[in-house]
Length: 124
Image (cartoon, rainbow, N blue to C red; front, side, top):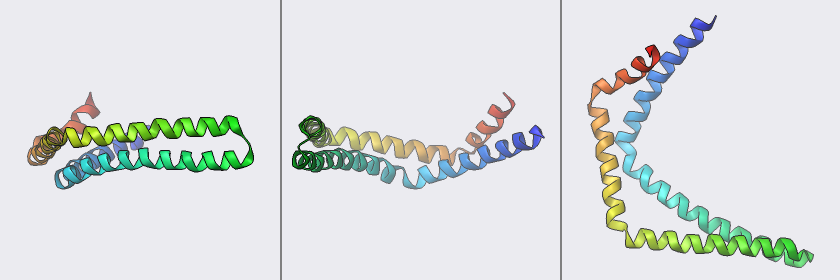
């Protein structure tokens, strides 16, 4: 019974490896910039949500939670500003790192031997 699941896992690992390698080859730069964007939006979102919760707690008279909400909002607001400054100041280095990621993804897609990695790990 377990041999069937082992063979399915083997085939699934091989198929997912191929899919991920080609996906990254096509969209590595977009995915990397998207992650930078998602992190920044996440910081801003937590900041705004904390400020909204602060006003809600302030209306309800819950000063302990209001103070916690404003503290979290302030912390994530500062993190958002620091992250934006890091992107602005280190844009060239970030662009170079993303270009290296894109080139390495293209290399992996061009190197067909990499598809044997799941097979080797299966037998190891």
